[in-house]
Amino acid sequence: MALVWLAQDDLASQAQELAMRRQYDQAIALWQQALKQNPKHFPSLFNLGLTYFNLKRPVDAVPVLERAAAANPKDFNTRYVLGAAYSQVNRVNDAIRAWRAARALPATQPRMLAEMLIVEYGKGRYFNEAADVAKQLLRDKPGEANSYFLAIKAFQDAGDFEAGAQAAAEAVKRFPDLPRANFEHAFYLQKRGAMDEAIGFLRKAIALDPKYEEPPFFLGDLLVKQGKNEEALAFLRQSIECRADYIPARVLLSRALMNLERWDDAIAELRTTIEMDPKHPQPHLMLSQIYFRQGDEAKAKVERELSLRLRRENPAILEAAQGRPFKN
Image (tube, rainbow, N blue to C red; front, side, top):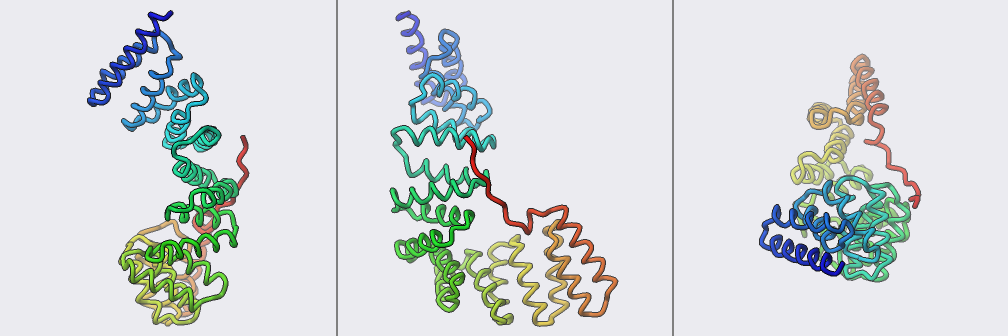
């Protein structure tokens, strides 16, 4: 038995050297040869799975890494890479289970693992679980800006207003020159009714990064809500210039034009929006409202019925995703 294991280790070592020289086909052949001798040879299983993963072959990586995890259940790196491979093949629940198992082991990258787990929980609509991990992340490793932004998104999805507001306030305090930190803080300020203060942070975010589409869109939204439609137009157009396919900005721009009774401009903007996103019901509803105000009830009826049909066919466009509990 000792001679067999020596041969397996030798094959695995040679394969590793070949892989380091990017001779992947030869390396894979040697690892597979070692596994024919012993299907549970952990170094060969892990390195073969990792190589498949690095070669962007997650479908091949998953079964090999599953065998590696079974051969050595307490290896952190195996669980970590296995979770990433599951995520790439959209096996969300399996990715979560792999990373939860990794978190129970001594972790060399606890912050990165927590961030990946937050994202995966979010993909599966396990919003409360994502928020729980986010709270622990900010408590244990609060130094990274990305940690705050992931946490804020998790808190928003979970409907935890206070946690989100606190995280946003801490983020802008730690990172005052980051446009997103200013934007996130502004979002919660307006939720609290502090409109003027929110607008100040939005203007700062725009000044810091004029190509960041969300702050001018959100500022335009606040201005429309305040009845300042003319002032909102420039910010909404700036948002669209930053991102031509930003449908919410185009819809809101159309709303501001409608409020100003600039019917032709609003119709033209809505037609452009429909060309970009034919399944979105909102532009058709707004066209219905314009035609009704212009006295063309026939066109208004057509657009209203089309809007209702599109809403039935594409409910996810306008409805927020509902959370659900994760089941082990």
